Length: 376
Ligand SMILES: Cc1cc2nc3c(=O)[nH]c(=O)nc-3n(C[C@H](O)[C@H](O)[C@H](O)COP(=O)(O)OP(=O)(O)OC[C@H]3O[C@@H](n4cnc5c(N)ncnc54)[C@H](O)[C@@H]3O)c2cc1C
Image (cartoon, rainbow, N blue to C red; front, top):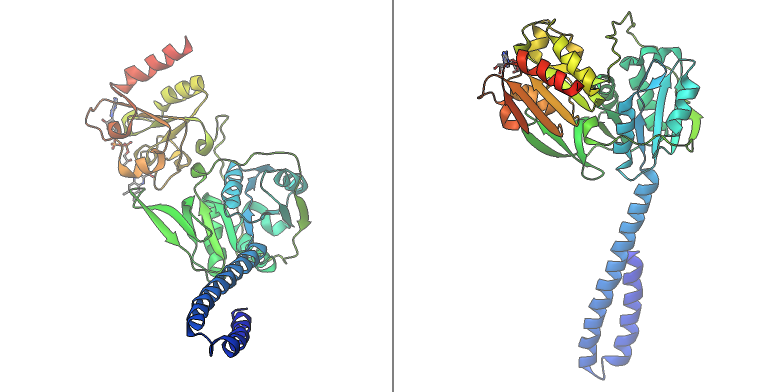
């Protein structure tokens, strides 16, 4: 296009110089000013149209694949956060659902109903039982290649953390993990050093593999089924690993990662039995219970309750830290909570530096008193 403009310009200069130059040099210089301004504006048009074409091409080529997580025939709440993050690239969002169960058709239509999902690809096979990463990663790669996807997004859950780096490695890409903000199509913010610094990273990979922190993106809303569905054409890869068994901690209380109110117990609880004090308070408030690593390591509660750098990252409306000192590794998991309350007998405990409300008291007196006052 630039070449064409230059050609047109040469023809004009030729005809003008033949007619004008001999008569008036001023006209020649004026023409040269006009010429350069025509060239500039032509070039401008050229560049901007090239940019537009480039952008248009990129828009038509770029698209986002989001991994849908599910268990026991139910969509995981983290999938809804992942969809919100996926929509932020501004490209059409396709949801990939790998499931063997009889519930897969129902899961697919539930996924199709999530606001922001333009299409659902359902990969139905026994190999996807228990969402083993060794089976799901090749499926992601085959789907991403077949659909020419520019972005692959998953929630930063145990499943997402397990499967996405494998898929990225198969595509020779660097995965970008635990993203808290999407700055652009290739630029992301993520925390490092247990949440004490925020790194802005830019990916040059053709396909960007991203896991997102669920507490940093609101959940997409379930709505009426609108998205189209299709069956996956990728062939199943039987994994070299075999799923043997699982031990699931059953609880009627809200899931730790998505609960609005969480009571965290630390080493100060002294024993697992004493956690009953926290469960009684959580039940009054309609919340759930979490723990510090020290409490988990001491065997007071299971490690599925651990909050922090090596546990779950939560951001509830209200977090009550009971008998927790506030080590940075614990803060990494809860400091984005909207309101933080601390109960600790040590007034120098670091937890008081991040708490909105602090109570310097013996927890064995303060917690039952609080529970009693709430019941009134
Ligand atoms: C690589 C690495 C990763 C880690 N990951 C995590 C993680 O994910 N999550 C995590 O929590 N930790 C993690 N840790 C451990 C972390 O450094 C701390 O050791 C841990 O958080 C301390 O737990 P705590 O606050 O319950 O115990 P402590 O630090 O022992 O604090 C107990 C608190 O209870 C108070 N207390 C005692 N009795 C009472 C009472 N009767 N009434 C009121 N208050 C009382 C004390 O004053 C004290 O402040 C990690 C450490 C490392 C090195």
